[in-house]
Amino acid sequence: MATLTTRTTTSGLIALGLAGAVAFLALWTLLALSGVVQKQFLPTPLGVLQRFVELTQSPFVGHTLQQHLLSSLGRFGMGFGLAAVIGVSLGLAMGWFRWLDEIVTPFFDAVRFIAPIAWVPFAALWFGTGIGGPTLIIFAGAFPPALINAYRGAKFVDVRLLEAARMLGTPGWKIVTHVLLPASVPSIVAGLRISAGLGWQSLVGAELIVASSGIGYLMVKGQASISTATVMAGMVAIGLVGVLIDVILRRVEAGIHRRRGRGE
Amino acid sequence: MSNIVFDAVTRVFRRDGKDFPTLDGISLEVRDREFVAIVGPSGCGKTTCLRMAAGLEFPTSGRVSVGGKEVTEPGPDRAVVFQQFALFPWKTVWDNIDFGLRNKGVLEAERRRRVGDIITLMGLEGYESAFPHQLSGGMQQRVAIARAYVLDPDVLLMDEPFGALDAQTRTVMQEELVRLARKNPRTVLFITHAVEEAVYLSDRVVVMSRRPGTIREVIDVASVRQSENWDRLERIEEVMDQDSFVHLRTRIWKLLREQQAPNDH
Image (cartoon, rainbow over all chains, first blue to last red; front, side):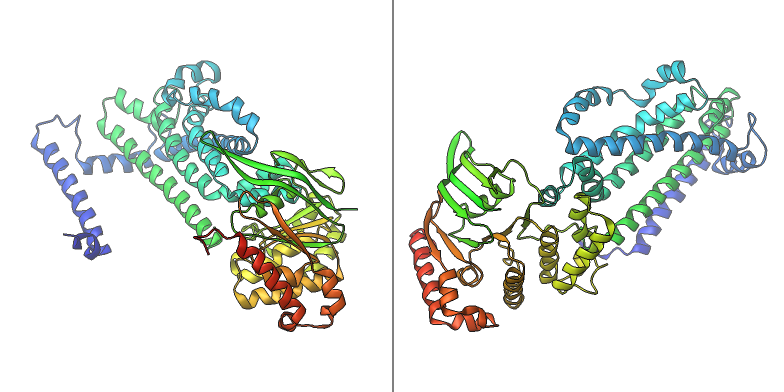
């Protein structure tokens, strides 16, 4: 039995994956065509694909699918960018300055258990439904992993390097930027991958409630007009963009590991 | 004047509510521009002595001072060469050596000159833009020594700097350190467990007892080196062949043997 893991080839694994997807789509098609579920509530995969293509060509609730996606990505960029910059710098600084750690940690530990979606009413009241509100919500989703991973990275830096830096007369802030930051890059990038995923998920959630454009907004409107195909096309788009973001960050991560070679 | 003074220094580790004394009443002065090596059985606290002079650890009682000032924190006036090099893996050879000078706020032109000079002196030309992991252990330790020397420190603290090197590289580095120390004398505290290395390099050798560490004996090497004129000999093996060298080495060796635990060798 142990041969399963050692003998299965890459092409074999791909074939298995394909088989799974084909089986899933076939079952879905059968279920849709059988008439057990009303067509309006369960379109065929082909129907969803058609709707997807349609949405890219003619506007729905004011914009094409690409425009909705772009608007979502803009908010995502804002929220994720802010979370990355603030989370990483604060996390690293907390890893070196004990007093900062003592001040921030209790507050952070309390706040991070508020799910991003629970920020929605507050975000809408304070920052509106345009760019501000959704930005805050994605920030709430993306910030904790960015901070935690940078902090952990900083805490696990080889103590000998820190001693060397202190011996060389390095001031505290420069230890953060010149030692903790470069030493923690793998941990930071791993954290940002989680951040991006959570941020993207929270954003679309936020758009279901606040916002007047974006992929979540498109889906809400699709729901209102009882167009399951529109809703599902939106879900497909979310999934595809999510995968794309992860692939990009994975490549960044691989590039960094390659460049650092064996030098830790 | 930049001497290192250990004044009745003790060090006690507390673990699980129990006290483990590691150093017990160390009093020693490393005089200005003197090269002193500490040898002793493993666990005797010799590295702790060095780390206290560096400001990386502190005595439980007693006082460690450098140049008359009590040591309270690490600093570039007391440069350390670590056994495991501790180079920054993301910085090039040049940037590793340059980093301490930047921290001191030395101007660009002077930094360039000083880093260039030490790179030549340590035989690192051509490796300026290499990263540490691309270098052999011997080359990495050259960088670590250059990084310490370039600061023009009052005292140099070397913690088994050649311990991680193979025998040949070790010999070369020992010869180069002697050249460097003669050309550019510094107050040096050198930790090692290699007796021959200690005799070859130092003015005085301090032999420590096993834990809790005390000073067993201090052996004057400088007067023998001078009277026997070891410095006329270029190679380490020639020095090590001298009867006077063998005599000192054997004496220290015997002192160390007395310190071994009965079931430990």
